[in-house]
Amino acid sequence: MTTTVPPADTAEVGTRMSRREVLQALSGLMVGMFVSILASTVVANALPRIIADLNGSQTVYTWIVTSELLAMTATVPLWGKMADLYSKKLLIQLSLGLFVVGSLIAGFTPNVEVLLLSRVVQGIGAGGMTALATIVMAAMIPPRELGRYAGIFGAVFGVGTIAGPLIGGLLVDTSWLGWRWCFLIGVPFSIISIALLQRTLHLPVVRRKAKIDWLGALLITSGVSTLLIWSSLAGNKFEWASGWTALMVVGGLVLLALAVFVESRAAEPIVPLGIFRNRTVSLATVASVLVGVALFGGTVFLSQYFQISLGKSPTVAGLMSLPMIFGLLVSSTVAGQLITKYGRWKAYLVAGAAVMSVGMLLLGTIDANTSVIVLSLYMVVLGIGVGMLMQNLVLAAQNDVPAHELGVTTSVLTFFRSMGGAIGVSALGAVLANRVASLTAERLGPAATAGGGSAEVPDLSTLPEPVLRIVQDVYGIATADLFLVGAPFALLALIVVLFIREKPLHTLSGEERRVQEEAAAKAAIH
Image (cartoon, rainbow, N blue to C red; front, top):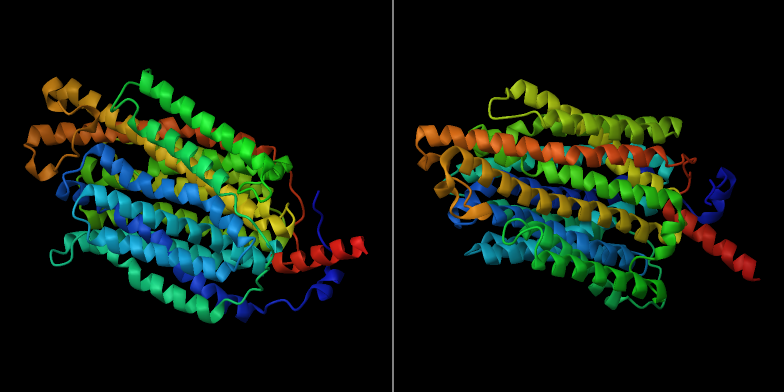
């Protein structure tokens, strides 16, 4: 059990970074976070146009999102483990470099196959940035003080998420630029971030002999990938109850079981199973999976709903995402400030999960005729809930583990949240494709869906008026169904966070705690 270190011990662990030094160090991190956020949001409104230009299908639409999520999910534990062993600054710069390579490949892609490959490379880079930014923050800033900086990161998150769809929409609607610049625009920001990190981020490098568990990493990646590929293809390329389903599900579970066996015996496991003996970490992990399934599974298809069901342009679709981001930004900033002031955090977890559940249920009522005002209100509710819940789950776990496990704990939570998101996107994407196909067949006859669940995403400009109305109605109903499917996961997350015990927040940073723990260990030996 971890207890709060008395303030008197602070002097023994070195000089704490001043607020100015922290802000300077965070500058490169914030630009990097902006880039990783921009990577997903700037593409959202461009996807319908990208799919149309490259002759992709609804399944490809899903996989352009899922492939990045999958790569990010599978590599996050590895990044987190390496952060506990090697230079955090060098690892972040490496992750940004990979992101640049993936972005350049995507920007010049000739077809959907190369685009999917580039998204995998982008995902590996984004996985490093996502895990390492939070790890570095925990190393520099005490949990009790993290809320003070939540507003800064909240602002970066908000600007990146708001600007992304807007920039993406404008790029797509500008004839002399086009959707390829949605990928290329992140390159200069990544290079700026690498330069800023080199100049401002100075953390001690803990060098010790270590062996990365590559077999465990391979088994985890393979097992998760197999299950995600199955959830995307089942009901589309083959039946849910079929030999392929049995083969892929059993194969994925066997690979994960082998991963658990290997991890339990590895000297330096990628995911130390011992951290799950910690009740807070275990519950926060389960909640993160549920949040990922509910949130990403529903919201990733909202842009498609805006453009196809409501008939909006990519630019307008970007503007329509503002209410949810506004709710998220305000709630995360306010909650962070209140946590810093009073040191209490569980109430925000519970309130966030409850409000998020309500938001999912409200969005489960939308259709092609829902007014923009009503839709915006529902999205604000969802954003408020997410803002209070997601980052505070990480805070609760980081506060309850030893300093030397900060990296792996943070990456495990990020891993499972991303895995939940990837499962949500792939599975609910398959549900959307099947729902669209069945509803279209009901309205227009079987001939209209000769391509099955993987029928191409429609180009509205080519459809006659009666068919256009039917297609818009079909996508409205199908999108609402996704939120109804996701709502029970949000409710389960609420139940899980109720069982997390609130503990006082540490007043020392991760580096200060690490030095103190090492000193205590040496004293115990002597």
